[in-house]
Image (cartoon, rainbow, N blue to C red; front, side):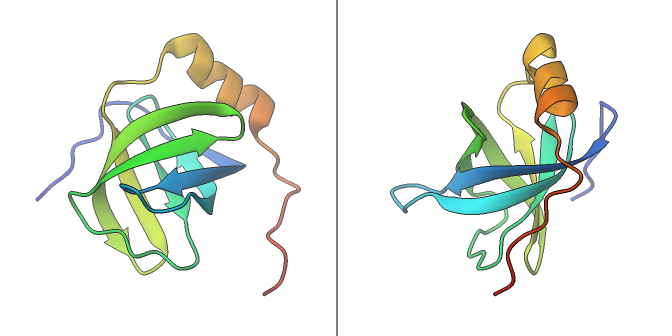
Length: 105
């Protein structure tokens, strides 16, 4: 399946959470975001393509999304609804923390 991107991606470093079904929320690191979706890193990802997930981006959300691709611990999702412009701008411009690094395992 070919995914056609309809909005520009923006590189970010933002902590968030991901929940699939009734599983507990797991920490994620957002790597890029657009109004239509995002790419994130999850250390122990068991997500599958086509699976529905709920994302929290710091204290904002939940954002319902579908997994559209996966490559080991990297996951790409498409939001169920495009993100509202002012919320997207706030996330991209105010929550991005390029200095943050995950704690060593």
